[in-house]
Length: 102
Image (cartoon, rainbow, N blue to C red; front, side, top):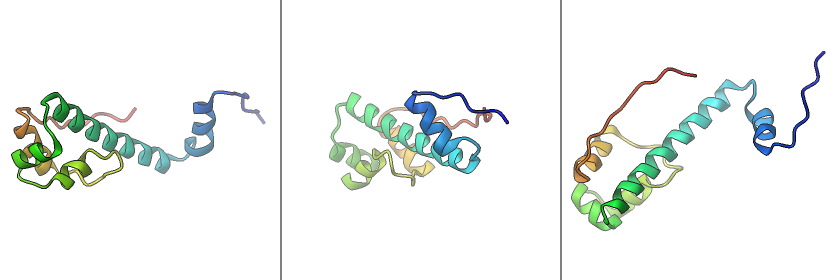
């Protein structure tokens, strides 16, 4: 029987405790990372364009609460249609890619 090497690295401890050998938890983590990435991107593009939630909402044809929700890292309801509308309002092109699992 092999004993796991002891560590004080918090990230390693969390990984071992919550994710190691648990593919469903790893999938949930990746989904959360993707939602956070989308939220950060929308926020960065909106602030770079110097737009308020209200101004972007008007350009997109939605409410300020929807824009706020889309910029929330915990929001998981991003639709391709809404992302396209946001991209168009910010004079951007939306790109969706499928990448291999690593």
